[in-house]
Amino acid sequence: MTTAPEVTLREDVEVLTVANVTVEFGAIKALSDVSFTVRPGTVHAVIGPNGAGKSTMFNVLSGVYRASAGTVSLGSTELNGLRPHKIAQLGVARAFQNIALSGTQTVAENLMLGRHRLTHAGFLASGLRLPAATREQRVHRERVREIAEFLELGAKLDLPVGVLSYGDQKRVEVARALCTEPRLLLLDEPVAGMNAEETERMAQAVLEIRDELGISIVLVEHDMGMVMSIADRVTVLDFGRLIADGTPDETQHDPEVIRAYLGAGDDSTPADAVDRDHPHEESSP
Image (cartoon, rainbow, N blue to C red; front, side, top):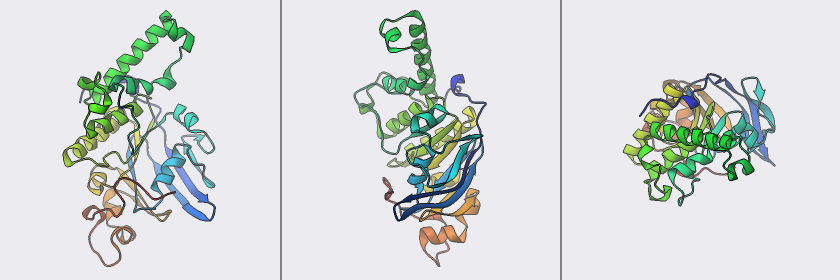
C-alpha cells in the first residue's frame, strides 16, 4: 500500500464506551446489559453465534437503533438518541456487509459520495462552477485518489464498480467509508464471501488502517481465524448477553465462549470451528 493519505489521519480519536446497553423489541431482549470499551487506535472485534446480537449492537453504534437502556459515548459525547447522519458527522463511518455501491458508476464516483458530508459548497455554487466550489471539488478528487491508492484501488478509479471482483468491491465499500475521514470505522463482516487470498488482503488492509491512519476499528466477523489474527480485543455475545471480553487468546480459551460456539465437552477453540452463523446474514433483530 502507498503512504497514508494525510487527510484521513485523526489525532482526535477517542474512547468508545458502551455501558449497560439493553435493546428490547417488545418482549424480545436483543441485547441485555452489554458493556465494553474500544480503546483509541485499536481493532476491536464483536463476535458470537447466530442471533447473538452483533448486528443489533452495530445498529445501536451507528444510530439505526436506539438503546432501551444504557449509554454509548464517543469520548465525552453521548450518542444515544442521535440520528445516523448526526453520528456520521461526529466521525463514525460504517462499511456494510451487503455491498451498497452503484455498479454502473465508477469507483471514483462511488468514493466521491463519501465526501458528501465534507462538502461546503452549495448546489448553486457547484452548478455554476464558482471558483470556491471548483477548488473544493479538486481537493475532494485528490483525497479520493489518495484513499483509493492506499487500498490498492488507484488503477481502478475509472472502472465501473460492477466489473470489479467481489473482493475489490468490498474494498471499495471500505474506501468509501474512509472517504468520510472517520475517527471510528465500523466494519460489518468485511470478509464475508471472500476466498482465502481476498481475506488475507482485507485483513492486511484493516491492520494498515489501524497502524497508519490511527483510526479505531470495530468489526463484526464470522471468520474466526481472521478475527484472532488481527483483533487487539474481542467482545463475545451470546443470545444478547456479554459472555467474554478480552484478548483474542483469552476469549478463544474461555469456557463460556467454547460452549457458545461448540457445545459443552468440546476442547477445541472457536478459531478451530466452523462458525455456526450463516456466513451472510444474522437473525433479526
